[in-house]
Image (cartoon, rainbow, N blue to C red; front, top):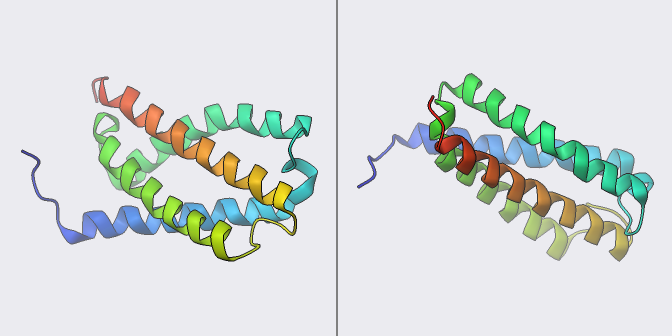
Length: 130
């Protein structure tokens, strides 16, 4: 059975999910069609650069919050679902990711990739010693 955590624990990671989503939204808006269009070789570069970035970001969040790295699966899941909910709203009801369907699709796919990577990273870290 899982121990109940205080509300502040959950709110911290929900807040981080919102902040990270907003940060990535700003980056996506700044580099926009230069990177986020299907078939663009720079999109592949962005995907590849995500691998070390996700790793570093997960470690940084663990250090900043004082959570051992092998206990980051639940915090990352909370961060991810918070960001995914905002992503769903943004893709479904706005043009925040860009003016064209191609740009929106490429940006949303990239965000899904990032969520998948963070979860894989957190699962892997959960099997390691703190």
